[in-house]
Image (cartoon, rainbow, N blue to C red; front, side, top):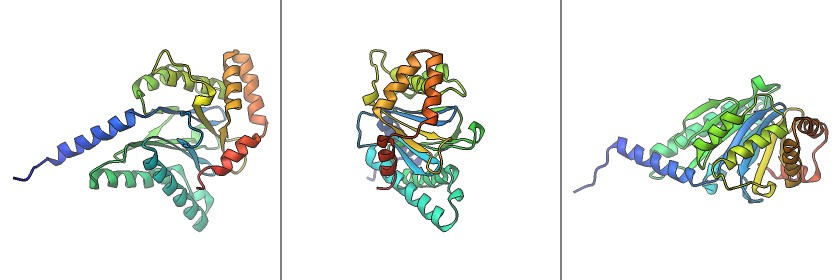
Amino acid sequence: MPFYVSPEQQMKDKADYARKGIARGRSVVVLQYDDGILFVADNPSRALHKISEIYDRIAFAAVGKYNEFENLRLGGVRYADINGYQYDRRDVTARGLANVYAQSLGTIFTETNKPYEVELVVAEVGEDAETDQIYRLTFDGSVADEHGYVAMGGQTESVAQALKDGYEEGASLEVALRTAVRALEAQDSDRRLEAKSLEVAVLDRNREHRLFRRLPARRIEELLAAGDGGSAGGSAGSSGGSSAGPSVEDVDDVLGDGKD
């Protein structure tokens, strides 16, 4: 006798499976700061990135199964390169990329036996904070237009609550980074995240052309130390960070992103 499962139960089982897989991963937070958008991941690996550049003003962050979100990242890079070449670079937007990802994830979720165990953020930095775009995509292709901050993966509720309590609109990079790290640490009160355990990148609206910049461990340590040193030290560190050019490590990381 054939075994029957209702479509509703099948969709529920798939959703539960994907949520459990995503929850097992380490968290990523994305939040706006005064000069752009900050990405912070609990990720000690220097090779398997959760945060990457997609195009000039667009970046990508993900949690879940690496091979699955890496396939999506590469597809996004191809989409951006082809459309930027055929039309105009200004025609490549986070909204368009989010729509492409939503269609792919929705099709995979409904038409295959195993859904992708991933959650994504596609962000585009604008001329000012009002024109920044942050889109969150879930495993079933749902899209949410987010403002201020986003938390994904791990114990999402505790991370999101910590972000809600600590987030300051228009904060400096130092303050925003410290807020993000405290939110990630909220999952385990005994754990303290060090620079070498973090993957940090920014979309900096003050840069020219490619606005994505990956921060090396040394720079992360400086920002965290400035944030701990008080508001005056944080402000000084912020202005120094925005006026100085990227280090050799920054340039090497940027040139390696999104072009595999």
